[in-house]
Length: 121
Image 1 (cartoon, rainbow, N blue to C red):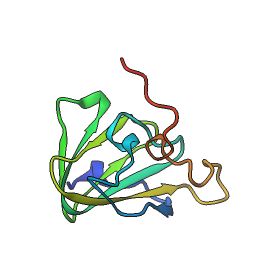
Image 2 (cartoon, rainbow, N blue to C red):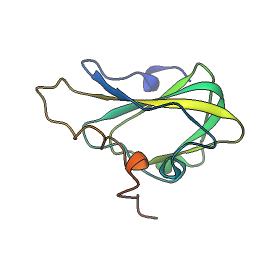
Image 3 (cartoon, rainbow, N blue to C red):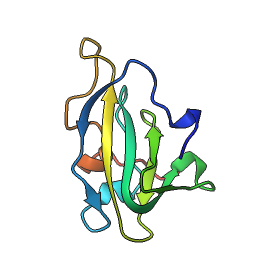
């Protein structure tokens, strides 16, 4: 993945990186529709293998993200991840500088907390 849509906005700070997940250890919430919290951007980084990344408002165009590639996830845009085979990935969370409001650490994504699933349309 490359291009302007895969760049984070300027002035964001890395606040947390998840542990490395694989097709067996990824939380179930990542595999179903979920969203990143308001004010938070995420970057899904694939270390090995490849995953399929799907924005729920663009399901006809899943993105294949391979080792060494990433996809940028804007705040509150519903999405999910699929594992067609073995892969490892981590998710980085970014937010505006600390003097600007943002979510409580650990609550950056509903896919990691298991709460606030995205309703079916």
